[in-house]
Amino acid sequence: MKMSKISYKVSGHQLWILAFISSIILLATLSRSNVQVDQFSASGIKLKSHNQVPRRNVSKGVDYPPILAYWICGTNGDSKKMLRLLKAIYHPRNQYLLQLDADAPESERAELALKVQSETVFKAFGNVDVVGASYAIDKMGVSALAATLHAAALLLKISTNWDWFIPLSPSDYPLMSQDGSQWMILSRSFMVYCVQGWDNFPRKLLMYLTNVPYPLESYFHTIICNSPQFQNSTINTDLSFMKWESPAHVGPRTLTLPDYVEMVTSNKTTIFARPFEEDDPVLEKIDDRVLNRSGNGVVPGNWCSIRGKKKNVESLKNGEELCSASGNNIDAVKPGVYGMKLRALLSELVSDGRGKINQCQEQVYN
Image 1 (cartoon, rainbow, N blue to C red):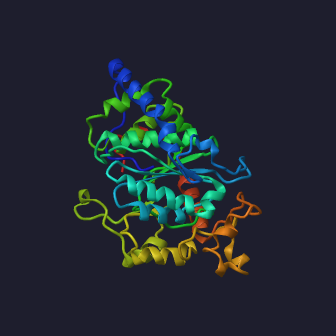
Image 2: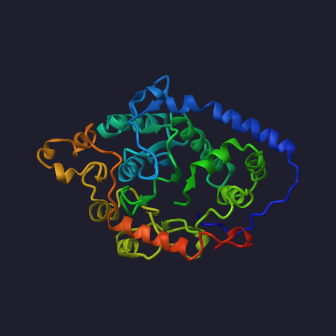
């Protein structure tokens, strides 16, 4: 996780009134969870309970890869990009939650749900959900932070298995397949603490940051640095490839074909790159050269090697029926070149001590 350039130690003021108000807000948010996620689901529309969605069991333990929970949140006009990103990061072991904010019309939200429902693989494994009712999200304000916490709460209710929470925007795109081992990747135990806040600190901080611009850039970092259970449990990298405009406050510039070589050969620890325009040719190049993804299908992996089952695949819809077959071992993974590169770079980060020193003692994070 990359730390923003501010100090994260907070004072011990007793914000009891703010904590009480924030508790009410958080409880109200969580109480809407079932309604919002159940209206649209991968296996059908307007289900009474997401438990009706068939979800295949996945194996857990030291001999198996972790289970990732992805939240992809977009706005008006983003549904096509969200669906492409979903297919690019799809693996049947993982959990996926798609959300369009209130700026998107109801028709687009319904269309996204129908497209998810129509995909044979998603329906077979039952691990993709679309939020059925949404709200306004201001990226600069506290609503973006509240939406992140709400998404984590929904995923905690949907699945008891996932290990890591990964929020993405529709402008993100992966630089390796899911058979390899964003802004941030947060553990399940940490997200449970942020949502439940048994010592009230996460709730206090949520209200404390209500009138602070871009609170999402400091909220999780502050909690980590002020919680003994999670201190010194971070690796200081955002795992993303971005090219910044000059001056930097303008934001990252859009990536195009001339950036491809630098993206895939960078020595930086990267899993995703951003931002991209919809249907930019560089995405097709990443699909072809990096992800081995063809047409409109999902990325094949060791759990479903379409090339190894080529016989009549041309007559099928992008090999989806083969990938959704019950005989596939969804616990099987085989890291590719980029996955091996990530493992080496992460091992280097940990071994050189950057993942073990007390980063929270620093006053400024780069």
